[in-house]
Length: 204
Image (cartoon, rainbow, N blue to C red; front, side, top):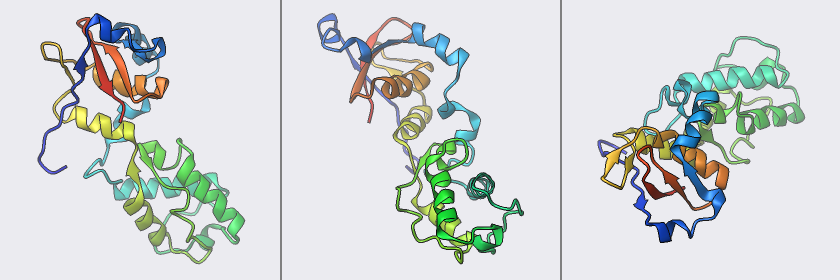
């Protein structure tokens, strides 16, 4: 993204346009504020943005992912050293390695999703008992891409989310827009800002 500044800007909705949105795609910041207080989304926790540079996982994050996933996949718990092969950690056959790959790709508490990233299902298919951890780490770092929600938040947080009516900055939109998109699973949502203005915001 370089030195460019980004801002998520919605399109103001008049009453007629607002009625074109189904009820499940309409959200209000006032109603959603209770959700943020009770259970803040992982996408705005500090750990998601720690080491966030050029939309790539940090080296320390990759090591943490490997450490967590090796242990959760039945590894022997030895300290992670990138110069070791998978067999050193107890992964003697492909079935065990398949479990490890699943943890890295698909388990939000331990894998790349913990930091708001995504890997394709076949990105780690090269792994064997003789694969060096450094090879696995490099592939994870190179091929892991931010999820659409993470990208949306990073764009908004660069200078702040903007309600198009006014216009005015509204920090609550940084949480509310991605959350509304995840709930409704549509191309755009109608959201009422903290000042009562309705606007349509893109989900992609």
